[in-house]
Length: 130
Image 1 (cartoon, rainbow, N blue to C red):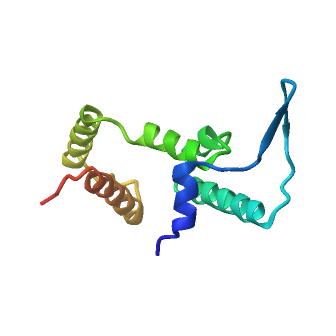
Image 2: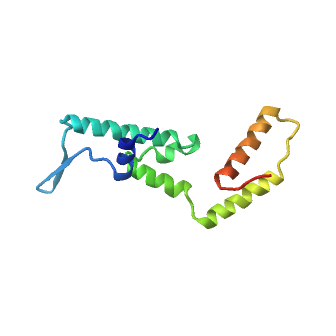
Image 3: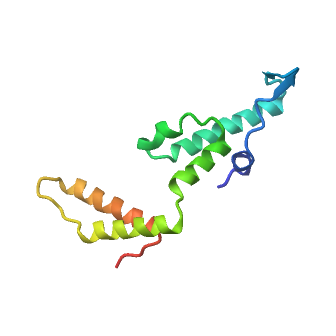
């Protein structure tokens, strides 16, 4: 089920915290209204959901981004890629699949996990395996 309120905050960016500029000095206004609290909770929830989708090895790279909209843009930029990049990645993964071997020193479940991960990555890029 899609939570449209969460998705709206991701796409449009957060509205909080509100800032006020007086004589060139920017001050952050405290959250006072119930709507502001709800919006802030949605923003935190959005950011948390996006961070959960990022692989563990990339968490630190995105942790400093506090806005859900900016985080989504950074994720798309990092993991999206253009067609040439996707084609190169597809070719590399196909080559790894064709050359896949199961070393005797590895446990069977580890070998299966490696193969499953490789196949999942190929499927994500739209490559069908026979």
